[in-house]
Image (cartoon, rainbow, N blue to C red; front, side, top):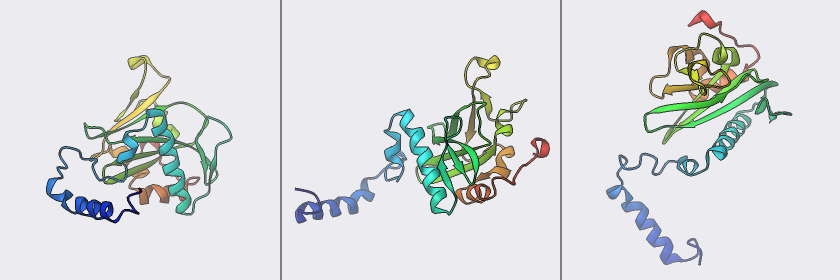
Length: 191
């Protein structure tokens, strides 16, 4: 019998929910009770697709034009611009790690980071990610210092590098940038 139809099971569930606070230890599992906790159990490849969907559906709900990319060089077309979407959950180290930036046909990367009860988002022009010399937090992902096929962005979630400031940080600021995605550009030497 389903929990919603068995009144005794429903009552027991209510009691369990109410006394949870007496036993809950957020230090033991900081993701317990998080609306994002389920994502952690998904395979890596699926997490990327979930991140793309979160960004897409959030942008649509905020009134932005979003459609699938016609090719694999970008994940979505948002407000008419080719966008690559990267996703990271908070690592135990307190970092977000956005992986696999490649020199493909996209104009902007949207980096969505989720913590148990918070989210961060940046809308970063491609030249800021792939330009040389690499900015703070950016490194070659494969092949050591000489590897150049992919870049990753690793940042302290509580103190992102200063160069990211013009590109968002909050969901609200990132969505404002996406609304004017075609017109914003901060020179590389401005930070």
